[in-house]
Length: 123
Image (cartoon, rainbow, N blue to C red; front, side, top):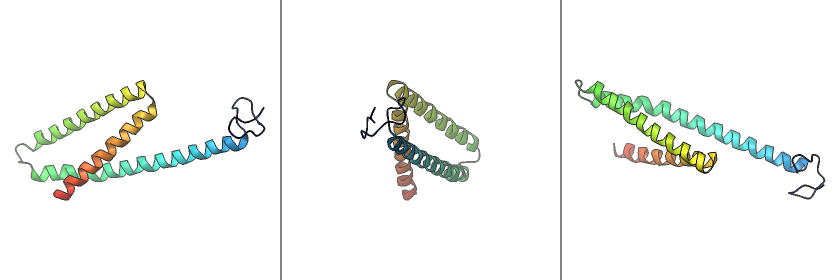
């Protein structure tokens, strides 16, 4: 038996690949894992940085009599967006693939970053 990718002798009939081609998959998977962890760390850092700034901005700009209402509305709007994005993610992941759902999340994150950057430059 030969490898389906490079025509070398197989080490295992179960995978249909030789050792070299299997190692390429491991290398790619490790690279994807590291890139994913770095991306998650960047998003967590951005949220930890932006959330107190946005809350403080609203806290200082809002009328004291309406401050609690405004902050409650802000949290409610965040939850509505989270639910909406979660539903779209679930639909795309079910109908197509989990990777399509994560691509959509990536596009949403980039779009939100651009919108946030534009509004922060104007402020």
